[in-house]
Length: 187
Image (cartoon, rainbow, N blue to C red):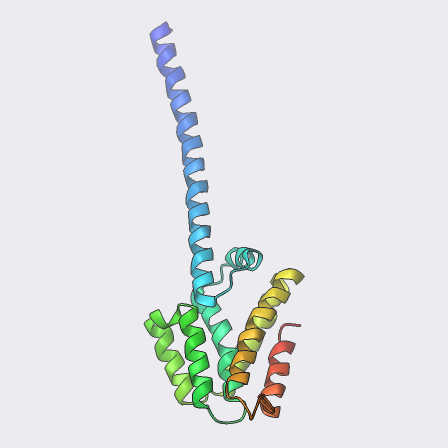
């Protein structure tokens, strides 16, 4: 075998090795970019900025649409707890959706508008509870607590938005019961 032939084969082996290594590195980089994009999309859809929660949601392949529903359904439930949607509750929900960037997503905006105009049936509440219960089994305790804290804080804002007189009775008994029910879904 000539040294020229040997050199070509050695070069082909090296090229093959480095090409495979480059492909592995490129795939790793693409996965990292995809994860970062997924974290950003989930953060935008939910308003969640806690990286621990976002990393776990990405690893579970939770979609931004699912996380949007996860964050909006409790707000809708609290607002409708007493059987009517107060104008200030509507305003608080729309403000929450806007702050999460959800008002830019036409499908979510249409769905939200339907929920604001007409109280959703009990199947939405049941589906939300099942989803949260299942999701919580996959989250570590710290992430579960942070998610619960975020969702419940937004829900309380809606409950408090209808007011009361001089801050007295700002959350109705029906809303308090609904908040307790929502919180229990995370346990």
